[in-house]
Image (cartoon, rainbow, N blue to C red; front, side):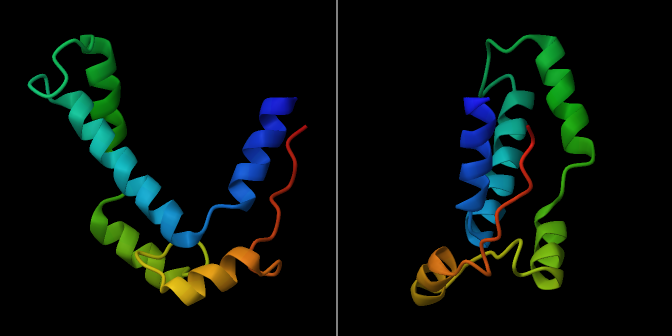
Length: 100
C-alpha cells in the first residue's frame, strides 16, 4: 500500500522533460543489456527479453513525434522558468488516479 502511494506521488511530480529523458535512458539501458561487451555477466534470457522489448520501443523519432503531439506529456527540453511554473502549477500536474 505504501509503495503504491509513493509511486503515485512520484508520477505527480514528473515533468514532461523528465519523462522524455526517462524513456531515452530506458532505451540505453536495454541496449546495454543486449551488448555482452558492456554487460558481460547478464544471463542470455535477460538479453533476449531486452532485445524483444527494444523491438517495439519508441525511437528518438517516435519520442520527438510524441513531444510535438503532446507537449504536456513529453518534452525534450523545458526552459528553466517554464519548468519551475509547471512544477508548481496544479493544473499542469494533475494527480493520477489512485491504484488501491
